[in-house]
Amino acid sequence: MRDQEPDPGPAGRRLTTKEAAEVLGVKPETLYAYVSRGHLSSHRAPGGRGSTFDAKEVEALARRNRRESGGSSASGAELSVRTRVTMIDTDRYYFRGVDAAELATRHSYEEVAEWLWTGRLRPRITFTAPDASLAAARRAVDALPEHTGPTDRLRVAAVAAAAVDPLRFDLSEEAVLGTARILIPTLVGALPPVRLSGSDEGPLAGRLWARLSGRPPSDASLRVLDTALALLVDHDLAASTLAVRVAASARAHAYAAVSAGLGVLEGPLHGAASGLAHKLILDVLDQGDAAPVIADELRSGRRIPGLGHRLYPGEDPRARVLFDLLEEIPRSAPALAAARDIVATAARHTPLHANVDLALAVFTASSGMPATAGETIFAVARTAGWIAHALEEYGERPLRMRPSGHYVGPKPPQPLPE
Image (tube, rainbow, N blue to C red):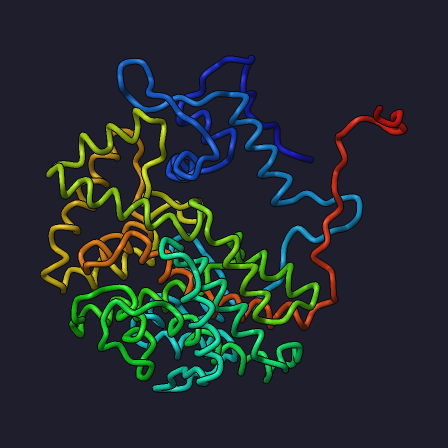
């Protein structure tokens, strides 16, 4: 028997933070994470203490959460996906059972990718793209308009690389892993270099740096970039990862599955979120104070980028690792101070922790990179995770990712339109 749920009250009633948290069965920190991600709206309580929430909106979210966590459809469609790749637990996450943050700080991006794919570590492995794949991808990317965004460039590069691979429809594990080790360096190598001294050899982080910044990298900066790539390899069933699994369920080849992920990644609530945080950091540095910048965000009704995460009631472990590494880079000090100012100022309205988007923004803003650099890092990193999920899905029943629609339109039969 289901426990009695708190009554959200009559229409128009405002709930306190405590009441709203009770209706949703979550902690106040998670409640504010819902606000950060746009799942709820809040208003300052009279007198300026705490926030209030619309009772009907809170109850609607509670119903939706119950459906997603425990409901079942009439068709028996699966609402959860079994996976051996990533597990998220409170304030930590794990790759194949191993603490992901520790793995990322001790191993390179390529080594973490291999662990995610095979459950084996391959020390000092680097990914190299064949000349034919690189040449095709570069020709395609070079033909794009100058204003083209990074995710568009990567998506076009993936399609071009697929076109020169006649064996792309081989979905055996060995073939897909071979594709992955070629595709990831092809995506990086297809991006226009900012530094002419950039090379197509060596660790992937060094090759990617040359596509993001005109400054020569320090060892500490390359370590931050490599660690960021490793931390972002996977994060359970994010929207882009689900798209990849749907494509793999239909037996799309690995290039096509990655293209599906790139298409979803471009949304401002996913891969592009770090770009918004990057601009916020620059605004705070320009103003010298976070208060007027945060005030403008709130006045415009926008969520403050870089704060809160719906899966972490506390601190985002990925952000924690990156902030610690950034402390070792003197050039990052102003951007780090700006990030701390943002968190402290925003806490007066919404007490949320910094997430990985804010940490990425500190890194990109202090490294002479454009606002889109975080999106590029995210996309390149996550490609390895997408391949891991595609491999899992290829081993499942084909077309199982096929939910049934719940029709709510006009009741048939309707007359033919005139």
